[in-house]
Image (cartoon, rainbow, N blue to C red):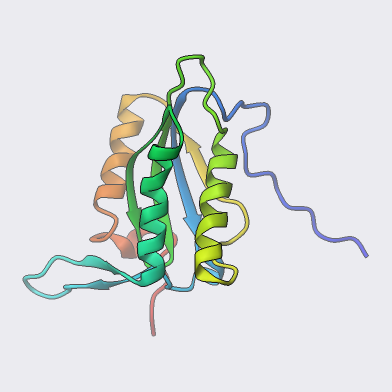
Length: 160
């Protein structure tokens, strides 16, 4: 039986260990809202996320990345109920980050899955190579306002 072939998600022939900024999105398997809950909606309250225990573990894992790897910085991130967005900056003085982006994300996903005790994440992840300051600022603002504008996010699942 021939299984369907997965479309490659990485840019062909691009070295994801080279210095640069990357916008990464990782989705929870089946887009289940396991990482947190949006609260504070209404006339006066701005929406904000309250993390679940597994959401707290994801937060710790993201923050641990900078401590573990020299030349890797998570410049900005947001944990949403069913996905996370990150700006990851690789800045190794030798010109190549260690580890490459896909290994770094794989380790983050592996650790948080082990803390969850079941399959937490969808396979792979979405990435965008940030090209220039204007692109960086646009993505920074997108992450910064994601809680308030979550219904505009393509990863948002409307509850019935």
